[in-house]
Image 1 (cartoon, rainbow, N blue to C red):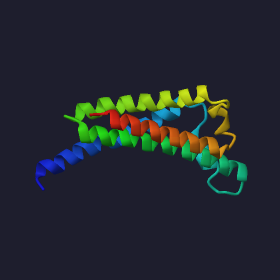
Image 2 (image 1 turned 30 degrees about the vertical axis):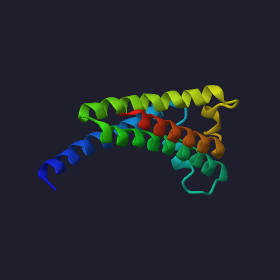
Image 3 (image 1 turned 120 degrees about the horizontal axis):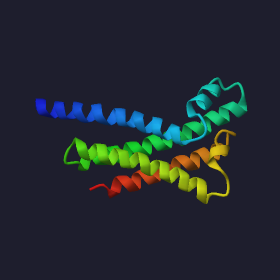
Image 4 (image 1 turned 135 degrees about the vertical axis):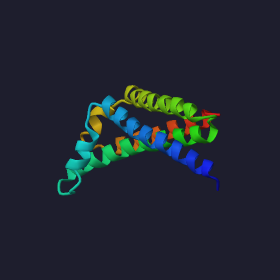
Length: 142
């Protein structure tokens, strides 16, 4: 291993990890419910409804994080430089939010009300949709 390999690793790591954090923050700004508050309230497991709310929020948020992670991983693999990773990362964030709102529009229920009510099935489906969107976008990067 060369020093330049280590420097590249550190550069990409120092760009993509904060981008993941920004992505999480961006996702949370665009949803009407407060994911971390739901997670914290349901963390003790004593109240079944609060625990279900926490699970639904965890699935929803986790799916978005993994979906964006797939986009970032593909961008790193296919990029010509750090600028490509930044552009694809930003597009990945926007794409995940658009997919969330498309999911909101095409389903007969409202995701924004079901997750805070503790509908775990909606949270799981939201996670799978986010993962699928991330996988498709990751494949499109070349």
